[in-house]
Image 1 (tube, one colour):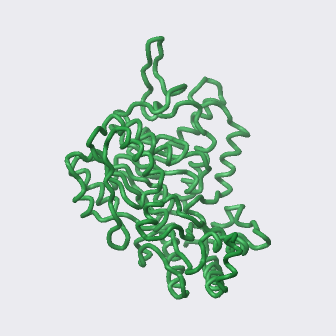
Image 2 (tube, helix red, strand yellow):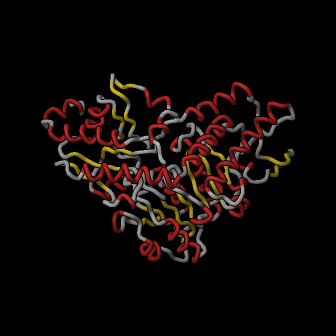
Length: 416
């Protein structure tokens, strides 16, 4: 049984009030809240174990190393990696993307070569490739929106040529919530011998993800979107891909031997983790993984799908509301971007915040996608494992109030 009220008791911040109103947190695609076990894992590290990882032989540093490597093993298990060495800790998903761009792609993408990506990419999985393509005189080819605003495998087949060096795409859109056919995309690319890099920032926290089943070469995600601390992310890479990559940053911990003439580098994944890593945050991420495993990702998925269905059905009955993305909740996660006619998204966000409801308003770092949709901004709600049907209903009631509010009043909330 999925007991959401029991789950909520694990999250201290959910008892907070905003402006005298109970917090209804519906901005989970931006960052998630943290359970007490994650908070405790971070503070316990500093209280009782703080040393430097992989450096020294005293008790504290040995405990620190064990905590760090146990976190790596937990993450590897969670995503179905073949071994823990295929997990590289980074600062966030953005850093993981840059690691692949500059340590793998830089030496393999040249003048006239192609990288395929999509219109729905987060800027973090677009701008690095734009910079790389410009500097290497390569070409970016864009997958447009297909049926149900997903990415179309047939379009990928059409775009691939003998010059294609990489296929990269977002597994789940942070704006549309759509779940793209990642396994099919990987199979298409693999038949042509083309590596695949998946942005999993919105998929790993919300749906079961198994990299061995997907068949991808790389996958990036952030800890803070999946109940973990800010400041820690993950790059999964197949061992043979990682072993063929040069280091991204140089310094302590990533070397094997150093002389005045040069250096040789440590084994993977350590050659990509220069300097002192965020051990406490890795420990917190491991606790987040255990929390999610205890609930079960299939259960998380079903819970979010039920909330999304409830919200979509109700929003469809409100005059002036336009919802973007698939109508079928089975094709999306709990991310719903929408607009209310005549009301700026930021004004709507301020109104909801005055009632204790936290949502996102803006372009969601997906400006090319919004241009393709013919808009400049949306409001966005995004659900997670601790949200309740009652919170959905409260949000809907406020949205109904907003729809009935005279439009001139919104100009004041918009700062005009």
